[in-house]
Image (cartoon, rainbow, N blue to C red; front, top):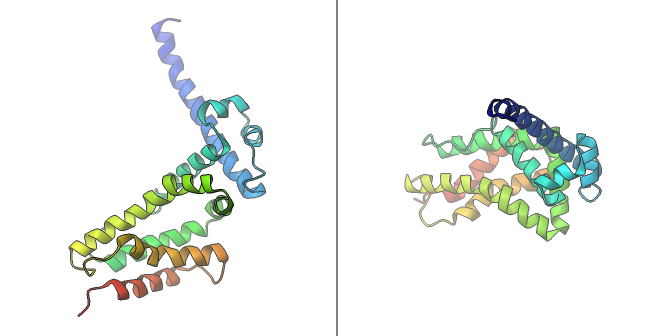
Length: 205
């Protein structure tokens, strides 16, 4: 093969790889939604995606790794419509914007079903849970922590708060209501969480 041939074939190979990767992500998320984590297999993902099992093992060492990458990809797609936490100088407005977007994400069937399946499995699988927290949850929570630190520096929050505990005042109740379906998950609820939490975190007179 001469150099010109190599250059003309490389883009095609890259596109084929990307199509295969996308098909694997879609298959993994669909299967875990339909059958649950325990019944989702590499063989099933490969069959659903129309690729060989060896293709999956060439890119990922395990089912968990496939699913976590699929979730990361899903999250990246969500960020195209879900804003990162802005810093407009109005902490309440910024948090309400993001929590409302989170409500939309959690109630979107394309996101909700696979997230519930992976979350449920994480309760009984400590290794999977640790990966989920490290690769997906902690990076998201850190965005909140950074925004709260900025607000504290600007005097919007009282000094010396535990930022991680403060973050959980917002996302903990939201997640609880979503997981257990205790009551509807709405924008109004997200706004109320922000108002209540900031009432306890604001500077004291």
